[in-house]
Image (cartoon, rainbow, N blue to C red; front, side, top):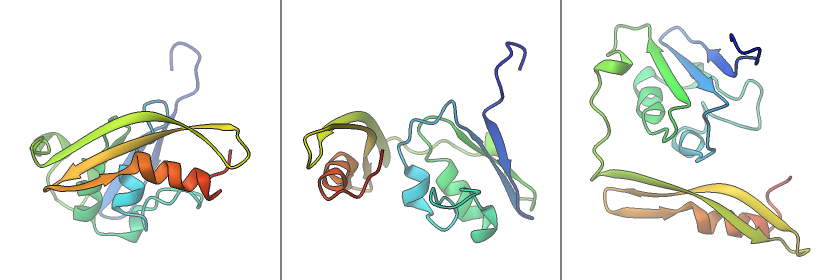
Length: 140
């Protein structure tokens, strides 16, 4: 980069699709992790492995990224990223929020959580974050 900062863009490859991730743009909404945990696994290194699912499934999940931190490049003849229609905002909405919760020891924990509504079903990640904190599932 011209301003002297190291690039935060990383590329993860497979035969069918490459996934790029920009850590500086990520807001940790976890759409990718919830959408395709075999490919997006924060407990593994590398944490993105596009060999673990088909290109169509990966593309569908990458398009859900609310921050634009994830992008894809098809190598199997599938539709390019810019040629696909955006997600229908009436069908798929994501609201990201910073959540502050006290853990069992009374220390404040902060995290980013997303509330997602998809096809009328509701999943509230804010409450899931609170539950994870209280049961000690999250580490600093």
